[in-house]
Amino acid sequence: MPKLSFRHGDRDSVVNLDGGEITVDGLAVEPPKRAWAVASGDTRWVFLDGEVFEFEQQHQGRRRATAHQGSLSAPMPATVIRVIATLGAAVKRGDTLVVLEAMKMELPVRAPTDGTVRAVHCREGQLVQPGVSLVDLDS
Image (cartoon, rainbow, N blue to C red; front, side):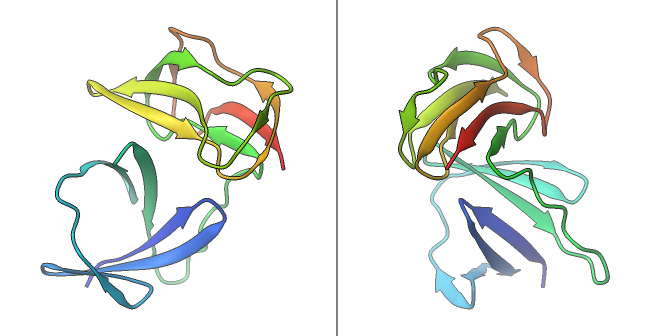
């Protein structure tokens, strides 16, 4: 049974996929009606209802790398189509800060927590790579 770690905001969860059944932290969930996924190595990005979720397949004996706290990065190669965040602006959890386009889909990059925009590292029209910081937040 494939097992994936899942991080959304500041919470880690485990997703188990067993045939048609999906469980998150041991609780059965209804499969989404439509989702898009992109894979690179052991990492999977799932796009669902305007949000991007990153999964990383766990291997015994290997620790998961942690992202830099307070920094929002591109989940995949994409083009910045809109920068909404402005330096010093107060944001609330879920606010869209940057909109990316990849594979003809718009991907909003949302604030994981309430905070203040400390830095904006991208501009409209820029091609960004996975893991490159787009916006830094102070919580």
